[in-house]
Amino acid sequence: MPDTITREAPRSTAGTGEFDAVIIGAGFSGLYQLHLLRDRLGLSVRVLEQADGVGGTWYWNRYPGARCDSESHSYCYSFSPELYREWEWTERYPEQPEILRYLNWVTDRLDLRRDIAFDTRVTAARYDAAANRWQVTTEAGETLRATYLITAVGCLSTANVPKIPGLESFRGRWVHTGQWPHEGVDFSGKRVGQIGTGSTGIQAVPVIAAQAGHLTVFQRTANYSVPARNAPLDEGFKAWARENYEAIREAMHSTPNGHPFRIEDRSCWDVSEEERRRIYEAGWEKGGLQFRAAFRDLLLDRRANDTAAEFLKAKIREIVKDPETAAKLADIDHPYAAKRPPIDTDYFETYNRDNVTLVDVRSNPIECVTPDGIRLRDGTEYPLDIIVFATGFDAMTGPLLRLNITGRDGLALREAWAAGPRSYLGLQVAGFPNLFTVTGPGSPSVLCNMPVAIEQHAEWIADCIAAMRARGIARIEPRPEAVDRWVDHVNEAANATLLPQAGHSWYLGANVPGKPRVFMPYAGGMARYRQICAEVAAKGYEGFVLSD
Ligand code: N01
Image (tube, rainbow, N blue to C red; front, side):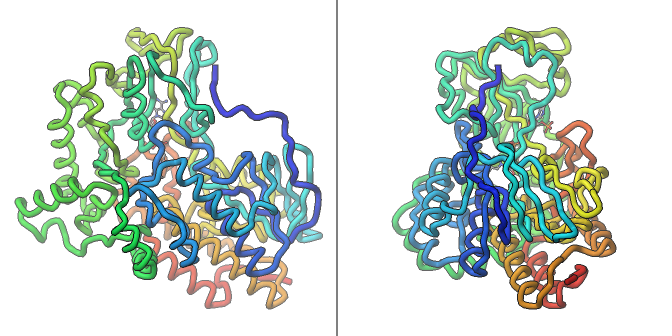
């Protein structure tokens, strides 16, 4: 029986009407986009949000251990020094409830709530060329019309529940981490099975293990992880962040991944083996995503990457006492950070508990779910009361395709992207005038600290709309040849790194059976991307067709 957030019949308050802009989604992106379009440009705007509150990712992902891997002082809006300085984070990495409180606080502080329709799921959006308006339909049957349609639906908002035969027959409860019940799940004394050891699974395992009777982790792909070293923030750090707001923002804007730390400008081969080891030890002790910034060539040179990979695998073997379990955990088949690198609190240590078992489902795959548990190909069965799917998302394209968007001449986005996403700058799609996709495929998005990527997109879109209105331009859409060039550039940027070498990564769509294998985010770096977007705008929106 699936156990997810229950939704009653739609009781949307979207209303029917004419707006300058409709924004879909009220997470980090939609909230800021609303603020810019309404309060800076003076447009009439309606945000449509399927949940009953703001927060997006942080509304849905309430699984045990859910916490951001970016540090608090960088995982927030930075467009306003007042907002930045007024909010006080409590820990090095913000926990899901704290981020949700923060986003609710921003919503009220900027008086955004009155323009958001909650409980409103968009079922279709169609471009009416004659009127140059987008017609947006909701589950409750309402229709809204707007000149600009902006998707702010996030990259990781469509839960991926693998189609495992027999799931419907399971007599226990099952739940996906991205659709976690608001009242929580009581694991006390229960036999819990968790499928998935990505960033989410690695956060959830220690917390579930601490409560469950027994936890069985079904691992298909072993993963690296570096300790997060989470801790309460002291007053000194909080004061430092407030005082150094400008410098922190400047750092986030000038680094490839939007984090406030810089990637060291040294090659792995510039230092002796002993020095390298000392650097990795220091990174391990400091903890966090910064570990991958130790050398500039870790994601460029496979041999350099191997040095970090070997260090991390040795740590696993050191921490995990049972050699067989340690060997399974350290049997990692991809370069370090070629998949999104997780960080953890006691992940590997948790396998030393008596109530935790690791099962390798790469060599012996899950065959089916039975009424009583999970059965593997060799017939071994694990009786379970609860199954946790930490199996990720139909990333980046999933949230956009499920909106059923149809552009000019009846072209469906699903058709346009049948062989994989094609966009210009990740911001617009040819054939879909005045549709803007915040952090869409082809933009740095998930390879960047998300609020930094989001702010840049929302600002670029607002500036673009302001420029159009000032010049009396009614429509903007990319030229097909600009899309072709951008798609080539996205591929080149990915191929210049080790990222495509993790063949099963969701960056490539490989986690969803049947999804086209295309490297979706832009790997050329956020700072470079920001510059490209600014140049495109400065050259009168080069690569776009602007028409009256
Ligand atoms: O999802 P994932 P996630 N049978 O796709 C396994 C962000 N995030 O939710 O690798 C067995 O990474 C799958 O195995 P494999 C972050 O960007 C951010 O963990 O496909 N196993 C894998 O182990 C992250 O990257 C924060 O072989 C199956 C796991 O499920 C993104 O969200 C915190 C399976 C899925 O891992 C997604 O992370 C947490 C099957 N049929 C997450 N299907 C922050 O800090 C899938 N798996 C902000």
